[in-house]
Structure formats: structure tokens, C-alpha cells
Length: 339
Image 1 (tube, rainbow, N blue to C red):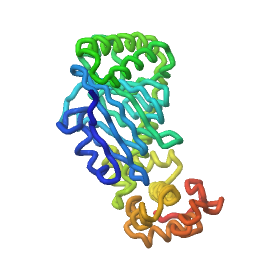
Image 2 (image 1 turned 120 degrees about the horizontal axis):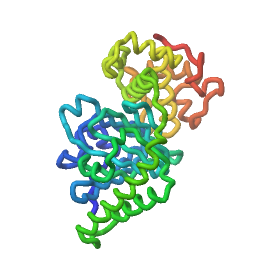
Image 3 (image 1 turned 180 degrees about the horizontal axis):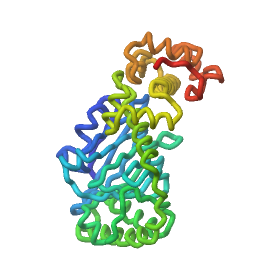
Image 4 (image 1 turned 90 degrees about the horizontal axis):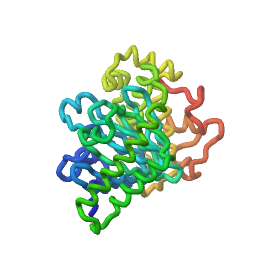
């Protein structure tokens, strides 16, 4: 039988860091887990244990973020491999070898003993769904001898992947009709099939990104995750990414946007999306202002009107309508923001 590993909504999503590992705090592994605030928050993970492995179905209607750094590995040396079947939405995986984008229908691998960061993104219908299997590394090596690095991804279009996914899905959905030893045989069979599929595609791993490209992705992701923090600064971002403020400024020059402009434009863009997709009874303008990192609703209103040419209240009443010239506030020169 399956069990609910965790379920988060508007009432408890801020507690996700303390409870995402389940009631016994031992599923997955240690890391920084966060859920993006939004008008709809519905995150649920259901788990089926098979011996020392776990099959988990994760569904979400908002973006999820997870980061495992060397400090987490030193504190919690859980050594497992996670096999991802992406059903809907996509995964963006930042790892030591670069950056991988795993789309619906793709297969990917992450490993707990190397640092990585994952962003789970919903599709156009605001749905993200993955089936992933957590396998202890020593068991995984029985089937896949060669070293498959974190971030390995490939289209799961081959028949081997389809068979393995179907077996794992059937095991997950089994209501207890299969005997335990039969379930274990089926899991081993799925891993054997995946082993051949992985071996035949390992040569097709995407080209490695440059170190500066990877660092830039880390910086942009850190900023996006911490946008709601009104104390966000070059110093805090640099410290969080393990680089100097000077190097951070250099990376953002590659992006073409100064730090303050990037932060304020990102906050205003998210606020605009939130205003257009929520009702006053769901989230007040003041609440939205604070949740995207503004210290006061008055400051938020001034900045918003400068960018969109209408007040937040007018923007919401118009259903997200604003003059064409300023709808894309990420465009160069769209709004002059303080540094």
C-alpha cells in the first residue's frame, strides 16, 4: 500500500523544510527544500516502499526547489541514486558537470553524494508530476556498473524505458495483491531493463557547460529562490553561492543586468502575475508586496506603477491588463530602478 510522505498547501507550505523527509525524517536525504509562494499551492508526495528502495509519485501545482551542497553531504552521508521519470512539467538540474533540462517524457538521474540543485517546474496547465525511484547506491551498482553522473538525462522514448516505467508504476499502484517477493523481483527486473537503456545512451549526455555559465545559473537560481527576502543583497547572494561579490558582479554583467535591476524587475514581474491570478480575498496587495520582498506596500505601489503605468489595484481590477510598452518589465530600459 502507498502512504502519504508529505502534503503541503497554503496553510503549511512554509514548514516544508522540516517535514519533506516524512514523519520519521529519514526519506530522501538532507538538503534545502522550498516551495514557491503563489495563489495555488498543492504539493503531494506518495510513497511505496519495496525493500530498501522507495517509489514516489510527486505532484505539484507550483514550483519546487531543492539543493544539496557539500555541507549537507558532510552532515548526512546518505548514499542513494534517484531515477526520475518526468510525467508533466520539467526538471532543471544544476550539477558539477553543467546544467540539464529534463522535459516531460524524459528520464534523469541524480546522486546524493554529489552536490546538485533541482527546480521542478509545472507545465502550461500548472501541473508538475514525476515518478521517481530512490535506490541505495550499492544496489544500483549491481545493475549499472559504470559511473553515471548526476544530471544524466535522456528522452525516455525507447521501449526499455517504457517497460521499466510501466513495471514501476504497476508496483506503485498495486493495492497489496502482489506478494512481497514478487514485488522485489519486479523492481530488480525494472532496474535490469533500465541498466541496458542507460548503457546505450550514456554517450549522448549533453555537452558540459563552462564554469562561469554554471556559476551564473547558480546565482540566478539563488536570487529567484530568495526574492521574498527584503534583505537580499549582493553580499548575501555571493555568500550563498560561495563566490566573492566582485565575481558575482562579473557574472551578472554576462547576464546583461545589474543586480538591483534584476532583483526589482523579477519581484515586480512575479507580483504582476500574482495580482492577475488571485482575488483580493485570497491575497491582499500588502501581502503580495511583502511576499515578493518589499518592505512596505507604499514602496511596492510606487515601483509597480512606475513599471506598469497603473496601480496594483487597477492592474488587478483589469485582470492583469497594462500598457503594451511596459508589460514585459524584463525588457531593457522598461523601467528605471534604483541601484
